[in-house]
Amino acid sequence: EGTVALTLKVNGQSHALQLDPRTTLLDCLRENLALSGTKKGCDHGQCGACTVHVNGRRVNSCLSFAVMHRNDEITTIEGIGQPDHLHPMQAAFIEHDGYQCGYCTSGQIMSAVSVLKENVGPTDADVKQAMYGNICRCGAYSNIVAAVQQVRH
Ligand code: FES
View (cartoon, helix red, strand yellow):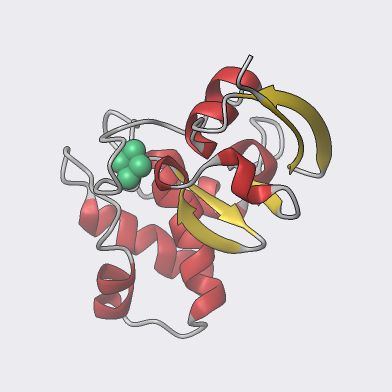
C-alpha cells in the first residue's frame, strides 16, 4: 500500500521495483538492490559517501528519490570495477594509500572518475576544489589527490 512501481537501470541492468515513493536513491541501491558499495555517511548531502553517477554525472544519492530516476542510467562503484577487474582509479587509490578506514572510498572514487571527465587537466588545487564535497574523516586527502593525478597522467 502506498508504493509505486518503477524500473531502474543500474550498472546496465534493469530492475523492476515496488517502492515507497519517499525511498531515496541511496536506500534503494543499498536495501532493495543489495548494492552496498555505496555508503551512507550523513544522509544529508554533506559528506559525499553516497556519490553515484546518473547519466555519467556525479550526484549525492541520499538527496534524490529513486522514483526520479526512471529514465536514467545509474552507475555505482560495483559498475566501475570489481575485485578481479579494478578501474584504474581503484588501482591508483590502492597504490597511493588513498584511504584509511575506507568508508568514504567508494564515493571518493566515483567523484574522482567524474572529476577527470569534467576537467581533463586538473592541477592539485583543481582536484582538491572539485572534490571538496567528499569528506575523509581520516584525512587521506593528499594521497587521494596523488591517486587522481596518477590516473590523469
Ligand atoms: Fe549522502 Fe553524506 S550520505 S552526502
